[in-house]
Amino acid sequence: MPSTYAHYTFGERMLPLFPAKIRALIQENRALYDIGLHGPDILFYYKALCSNEVNAVGYEMHDKPGADFFAPAKEIWQQFRTDGASCAQHTAYLLGFLCHYALDQCCHGYVEKMMAVSGLSHAEIETEFDRFLLLQAGKDPLRAHLTQHIHPTRDRARVIADFFPTLTTEQIFQALCSMIRYHKLLRTPGTLKRSFLLGILKISGNYADMHGLLMRKNSNPACQLSNNGLSRRLGQALHECQSLTQEYLDCLEKNTPLSTHFMPTFGAGDSWQHISLES
Figure (cartoon, rainbow, N blue to C red):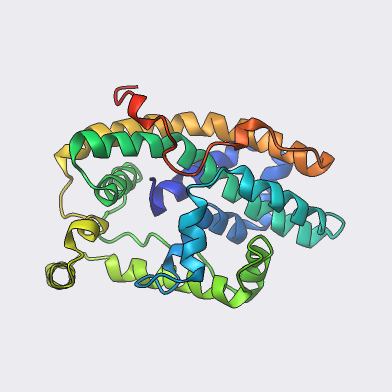
C-alpha cells in the first residue's frame, strides 16, 4: 500500500487536475484535504502498539468496498450542504479521502503480487517507494519530515469525526497527533537512533514485520521493479481519481446512488494474483 509521502504526492499532483471551482474550495480548506489524503490510515496511529476500537476501524475499512464509506458519507454531507463554510470543509476532506481511495485501489493489488513474488515485506515496498518519490522531489529521505502537512486541531477533528460515527472528536485528534509523533520517532538520520530502534524491534520480536518502516540509508536494489511499477500506477490513479471525483460530486449534488466504481475495496482485492508486474 502506498505510504505517507506517496499519498501526499498523489494529492499534490491531483490539485491542478480538479476543476477550478473545486481547486479553490480545496485551497481554502487545505488542511482538511491534506488529512483526507491519508484516508482511514490516520486511525492506525491511535495507541498504535495495541489493538483498540479506533485503529480497528482503520484496519477493517481496507477490506470493505469504498461504497461502505462513501455512501454514508454522502448522507452525512447532505446535512451540511446549506451551511457554506461547513459544507466546504466536509467537501475538502471527502475529496482528499477520495484521492486516498483511488491510489489504494490502483496500487494495493500490485503490492500484494510483488510481496508474493519477491519476498519483500509490505513495509519495505511502501517505504522504498516513499524514498523514490522523495528523491524525485530533491529531498533527503533520511531527514524529510513526512507529516509537515498534517495540522491537527479539534475543529478539524470534529469535521472528520462526522464521517466516523463510532469515534469521537478527541479520538480523531489524538490519532492525528500520534501520527506526527510516530513519524518523528521513525525518522532516523543518525546511526545511533537507527541502531537503537532496530535493537528494540529485535528484542520485542517485531523486527521481521516492522524494520521496513525505517528508511534505509541507501536504496534497496530489490525494490527497483516495485518503485517503477508503483510510479506507473500512481499516474494511472490520477486519471481514475478524476473520474471518481466527478462521479462523486454528481452524487453529492444530486443525492444519487453510487455506481459500481466504488465497489472495489481499499485493499488488494481477490484478483491480485493475475496482475502483471511489468504493466
